Length: 155
Image 1 (cartoon, rainbow, N blue to C red):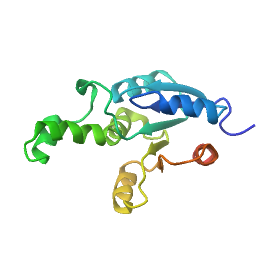
Image 2 (image 1 turned 180 degrees about the vertical axis):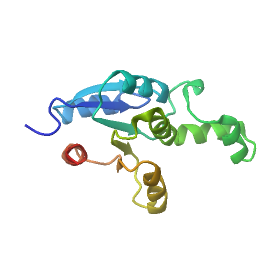
Image 3 (image 1 turned 90 degrees about the vertical axis):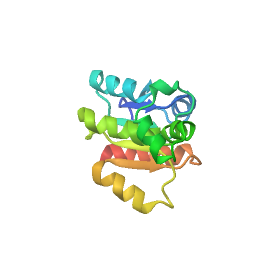
Image 4 (image 1 turned 30 degrees about the vertical axis):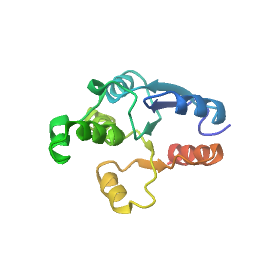
């Protein structure tokens, strides 16, 4: 029996790919799913969750479901509202990560599906606020995901 058996993993994504793939290829945990940050925080408040598996990009949810300040994102994108929305979509995982921390769930480890291998400074900055943050690139095998999940839960 692994450290994953019987544990609850919350998958936060805008589709169903991670849920289907993890349930199929990484057996053992009980999987829950949220499709946006507000739903994720509500589930964390109701359910004991051992680990959050978080997508970075959310481009299949209604814009009003996105977390973050669209006006500020628009200003940062040279006043272009469409680019402001795209920024929120492309970085939504970070906004969800922040919402989870601010809601009082910083102790729950997070695996963010994003490749930080070329962004060491960005990752270090994020880990200062979220010390239980881990990451995995999209191109990863089930064995690698299983090993990372077990390592994170054993820590």
